[in-house]
Image 1: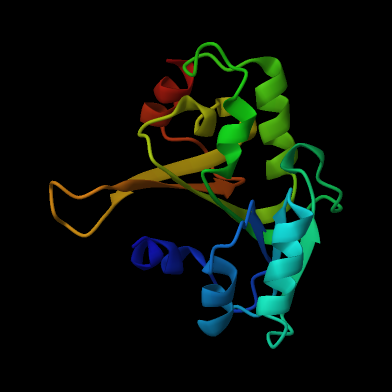
Image 2: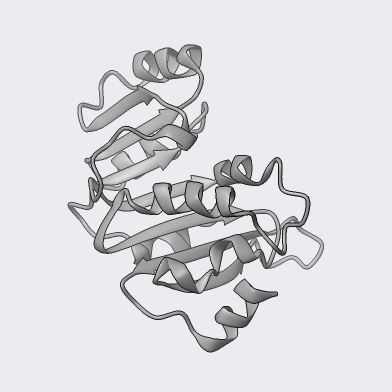
Length: 178
Protein backbone atom coordinates (compact mmCIF):
# COMPACT_ATOMS: atom_id res chain seq x y z
CA UNK A 1 0.00 0.00 0.00
CA UNK A 2 2.93 2.34 0.43
CA UNK A 3 4.94 1.40 -2.70
CA UNK A 4 3.55 4.32 -4.76
CA UNK A 5 4.98 6.73 -2.16
CA UNK A 6 8.15 4.68 -1.62
CA UNK A 7 9.31 4.14 -5.20
CA UNK A 8 10.10 7.82 -5.97
CA UNK A 9 12.55 7.73 -3.05
CA UNK A 10 14.55 4.84 -4.56
CA UNK A 11 17.04 4.80 -7.42
CA UNK A 12 18.33 1.84 -9.42
CA UNK A 13 21.58 0.69 -7.85
CA UNK A 14 20.72 1.94 -4.36
CA UNK A 15 22.28 -0.06 -1.54
CA UNK A 16 19.22 -0.74 0.63
CA UNK A 17 19.09 -1.86 4.27
CA UNK A 18 15.78 -3.24 5.56
CA UNK A 19 15.60 -3.08 9.37
CA UNK A 20 13.59 -5.71 11.25
CA UNK A 21 12.61 -7.57 8.09
CA UNK A 22 10.70 -10.31 9.90
CA UNK A 23 8.95 -12.63 7.44
CA UNK A 24 7.80 -9.72 5.26
CA UNK A 25 8.12 -10.02 1.49
CA UNK A 26 9.30 -6.38 1.27
CA UNK A 27 12.94 -7.29 0.51
CA UNK A 28 11.90 -9.75 -2.18
CA UNK A 29 9.39 -7.27 -3.63
CA UNK A 30 12.17 -4.68 -3.89
CA UNK A 31 14.36 -7.25 -5.65
CA UNK A 32 11.57 -8.05 -8.10
CA UNK A 33 11.21 -4.33 -8.86
CA UNK A 34 14.89 -4.20 -9.86
CA UNK A 35 16.55 -3.15 -6.59
CA UNK A 36 19.13 -5.91 -6.44
CA UNK A 37 21.39 -4.72 -3.61
CA UNK A 38 19.21 -5.36 -0.55
CA UNK A 39 20.44 -6.33 2.91
CA UNK A 40 17.80 -7.34 5.44
CA UNK A 41 18.35 -7.75 9.16
CA UNK A 42 16.31 -9.12 12.01
CA UNK A 43 16.95 -10.00 15.65
CA UNK A 44 15.61 -13.55 15.17
CA UNK A 45 18.04 -16.22 13.89
CA UNK A 46 15.11 -18.50 13.01
CA UNK A 47 13.49 -15.76 10.96
CA UNK A 48 16.69 -14.98 9.05
CA UNK A 49 17.31 -18.70 8.37
CA UNK A 50 13.78 -19.05 6.98
CA UNK A 51 14.13 -15.95 4.79
CA UNK A 52 17.52 -17.11 3.43
CA UNK A 53 15.96 -20.43 2.47
CA UNK A 54 12.79 -18.88 1.00
CA UNK A 55 14.68 -16.43 -1.21
CA UNK A 56 17.87 -18.40 -1.96
CA UNK A 57 17.11 -17.92 -5.67
CA UNK A 58 17.64 -14.13 -5.36
CA UNK A 59 21.42 -13.54 -5.23
CA UNK A 60 21.10 -9.79 -4.58
CA UNK A 61 19.29 -10.38 -1.29
CA UNK A 62 21.47 -10.67 1.80
CA UNK A 63 20.25 -11.63 5.27
CA UNK A 64 21.87 -11.06 8.66
CA UNK A 65 20.97 -11.60 12.29
CA UNK A 66 21.48 -8.23 13.96
CA UNK A 67 20.01 -6.00 16.66
CA UNK A 68 19.13 -2.51 15.39
CA UNK A 69 20.49 -1.12 18.66
CA UNK A 70 23.93 -2.55 17.85
CA UNK A 71 24.42 -2.34 14.08
CA UNK A 72 27.82 -3.58 12.90
CA UNK A 73 27.97 -2.15 9.38
CA UNK A 74 30.53 0.56 8.63
CA UNK A 75 29.00 4.05 8.56
CA UNK A 76 27.57 5.13 5.19
CA UNK A 77 27.22 1.52 3.98
CA UNK A 78 23.78 2.15 2.49
CA UNK A 79 21.97 4.68 0.32
CA UNK A 80 18.58 3.87 1.80
CA UNK A 81 17.44 2.48 5.15
CA UNK A 82 13.85 1.18 5.25
CA UNK A 83 11.85 0.23 8.30
CA UNK A 84 8.24 -0.67 9.01
CA UNK A 85 7.70 0.09 12.67
CA UNK A 86 11.01 -1.43 13.73
CA UNK A 87 12.32 1.83 15.15
CA UNK A 88 9.48 1.69 17.66
CA UNK A 89 11.81 -0.54 19.67
CA UNK A 90 13.92 2.55 20.35
CA UNK A 91 10.93 4.11 22.09
CA UNK A 92 9.92 1.17 24.31
CA UNK A 93 11.35 2.63 27.51
CA UNK A 94 10.39 6.21 26.75
CA UNK A 95 7.91 7.69 29.21
CA UNK A 96 6.95 10.59 26.92
CA UNK A 97 7.02 10.10 23.13
CA UNK A 98 7.05 13.89 22.68
CA UNK A 99 10.31 14.27 24.61
CA UNK A 100 12.67 11.45 23.72
CA UNK A 101 15.63 10.64 25.93
CA UNK A 102 19.26 11.19 24.93
CA UNK A 103 19.62 7.39 24.77
CA UNK A 104 16.79 7.03 22.25
CA UNK A 105 18.16 9.94 20.20
CA UNK A 106 21.63 8.35 20.22
CA UNK A 107 20.18 5.02 19.03
CA UNK A 108 18.36 6.81 16.20
CA UNK A 109 21.62 8.60 15.29
CA UNK A 110 23.32 5.18 15.07
CA UNK A 111 20.70 3.94 12.61
CA UNK A 112 21.00 7.12 10.55
CA UNK A 113 24.80 6.75 10.43
CA UNK A 114 24.28 3.73 8.16
CA UNK A 115 23.15 6.06 5.37
CA UNK A 116 25.70 7.73 3.10
CA UNK A 117 25.68 11.42 2.16
CA UNK A 118 22.52 12.44 0.33
CA UNK A 119 20.92 9.13 1.29
CA UNK A 120 17.46 8.43 2.58
CA UNK A 121 15.83 6.84 5.61
CA UNK A 122 12.23 5.76 5.08
CA UNK A 123 9.96 4.72 7.92
CA UNK A 124 6.46 3.35 7.75
CA UNK A 125 4.58 3.92 10.99
CA UNK A 126 1.04 3.60 12.27
CA UNK A 127 1.03 6.94 14.07
CA UNK A 128 1.36 10.51 12.88
CA UNK A 129 3.19 12.66 13.70
CA UNK A 130 6.02 11.48 15.89
CA UNK A 131 8.86 13.73 16.99
CA UNK A 132 11.38 10.88 16.91
CA UNK A 133 11.73 11.64 13.21
CA UNK A 134 12.12 15.41 13.53
CA UNK A 135 14.99 16.43 15.84
CA UNK A 136 16.88 19.27 14.21
CA UNK A 137 20.16 17.76 15.45
CA UNK A 138 19.87 14.91 12.94
CA UNK A 139 20.63 17.28 10.05
CA UNK A 140 18.04 15.65 7.81
CA UNK A 141 15.01 16.93 5.94
CA UNK A 142 11.68 15.28 6.70
CA UNK A 143 8.61 14.61 4.60
CA UNK A 144 5.66 12.64 5.88
CA UNK A 145 2.47 11.52 4.21
CA UNK A 146 -0.49 9.25 4.90
CA UNK A 147 -0.67 6.06 2.84
CA UNK A 148 -3.80 4.01 2.32
CA UNK A 149 -6.31 2.90 -0.25
CA UNK A 150 -8.27 6.16 -0.24
CA UNK A 151 -11.13 4.81 1.86
CA UNK A 152 -11.59 7.11 4.86
CA UNK A 153 -12.54 4.13 7.01
CA UNK A 154 -9.48 2.12 5.97
CA UNK A 155 -6.39 1.68 8.07
CA UNK A 156 -3.66 4.12 7.07
CA UNK A 157 0.09 4.11 7.45
CA UNK A 158 2.33 7.13 7.66
CA UNK A 159 5.43 7.30 5.53
CA UNK A 160 8.36 9.30 6.90
CA UNK A 161 11.11 10.18 4.44
CA UNK A 162 14.29 11.70 5.81
CA UNK A 163 17.01 12.92 3.46
CA UNK A 164 20.54 13.29 4.77
CA UNK A 165 22.20 16.67 4.43
CA UNK A 166 19.05 18.67 3.72
CA UNK A 167 17.56 21.15 6.20
CA UNK A 168 14.49 20.43 8.25
CA UNK A 169 11.45 22.50 7.29
CA UNK A 170 10.58 25.03 10.05
CA UNK A 171 7.20 23.30 10.59
CA UNK A 172 9.00 20.04 11.25
CA UNK A 173 11.51 21.74 13.55
CA UNK A 174 8.49 22.66 15.67
CA UNK A 175 7.33 19.02 15.57
CA UNK A 176 10.71 17.88 16.90
CA UNK A 177 10.50 20.37 19.78
CA UNK A 178 6.90 19.57 20.69
